[in-house]
Each structure stands twice: as structure tokens, then as C-alpha cells.
Length: 228
Ligand SMILES: C[S@@+](CC[C@H](N)C(=O)[O-])C[C@H]1O[C@@H](n2cnc3c(N)ncnc32)[C@H](O)[C@@H]1O
Image (cartoon, rainbow, N blue to C red):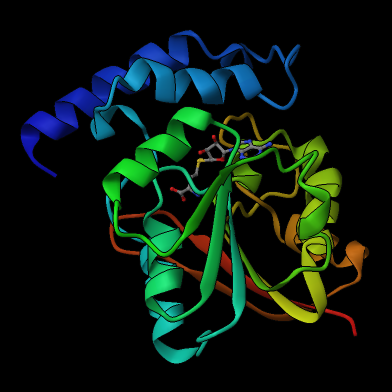
């Protein structure tokens, strides 16, 4: 990250925090739709102004893909933002669909990757297209759960599980928190209990790692399988 990029990112974070009601504990828009849409709208095409856009796939996803074949699987990337994780799934050979709430994010991802094989769609995790029900072998989500208030986790977990075919797998990457008490967010890093709680939706927790990517706090990388 250049100094100039870092300065633009810091300024954007300040602007975005100032218009984020959740920062002062107000959750009149509990799904935070307006704020997420505003992030992409106000960025005006500057990736530095999208706080999570690292212009590369998440290191914990890249590392995982190095040892797990997903070639030819039908994959879904949830809350795909500007598309780097979805592109990594497609590069690993998966037939990839990726979606985000923000139409601006989706058109931006398409502009960034004009030759992409990813099917980018604007859609809402909480009211997804009916044809996605039990349609995917592999679902990936990075940082979307932790961007939602903790009390939405059961609904979000149910939606993630609904995308999986029986026997399909879900990979979750999120910051971890040691304390089970609800954190002051956003973001709302996940406690071990939150990760385990996703098993309420017919998911079996196959592996759970707590890892620290370079220059980052501790993260969960959790792999679930949908019961057959
Ligand atoms: C913290 S960002 C993470 C983006 C990306 N997964 C990454 O790791 O860089 C959360 C993303 O989820 C999207 N999002 C939030 N709520 C959503 C919803 N209900 N349905 C679909 N996408 C949503 C936001 O627009 C945003 O792009």
C-alpha cells in the first residue's frame, strides 16, 4: 500500500464512520443496507475508499485454496465486494457466482475483471434468488458475517446454509474475538460460540483454525459441511 493510498483510505474511513449510525449504536437499519450502499457510492471509483478492498484475495483463502481442490465445483462468494475472492475461486477452477447487495460494487467488479468467468450478481443475502437454494457445492464468505450485528447471525447462518447442496461445504473467514460477550461494533468479530452456533442450520463443523494473517489480528477459518 503506497502512502497516498493509505492516506486516502484513512480519510475514507473517517468519512464513512461519520455517516455510520451503527458506530453510535443506532441500528434503525439493522441490515446496514444504506451504509454498505453508501460506501461504494461515495468511493467514486477509488478502491482506497472501500475499507475492505485489498485488491487481492484474502491470504487465508489463497492459502486454503492451495491445498483444497475446488475445480469444477459450483461455488458462491457471498458479499463479494470488488471481486478479488471470487476471482480466486474462479482461478482455482470453480464455476463461480458472486453477489453483493450493492449494485455499484457489482458493476465495479465487472469493470475490474472484464474477462472474468465469474457470474457477478446484485442480490441480498437475506432475500436471495430462489434458484440458489441448495444449488452450490461450495460457499465462501469473508467478513460479511462480522459486518452484521451479532443478533443477525442466526438469520445469516440460515441463509448461508440454504445455498448448499447436501454434502456441500461452507468456508467462513472472519476476525475472532476471545470474549464471548457481545462486542461494540462495527465490525463485530466472531466468538467461538458464534462459529459453533452456525451448526444449528444443519451444518457440521469439519475444521476450525484460529490464525493470524500477516499484520492482522487473529481470524477464524471455519469449514462446515452440510449434512447429507
Ligand atoms: C466487509 S465487506 C467484505 C467484502 C468482501 N467479502 C471482502 O472480503 O473483501 C461486506 C460486504 O458484504 C456486502 N453485504 C452486506 N450486506 C449484504 C447483504 N445483505 N447481502 C449481500 N451482500 C451484503 C457489502 O456490500 C460488502 O461488500
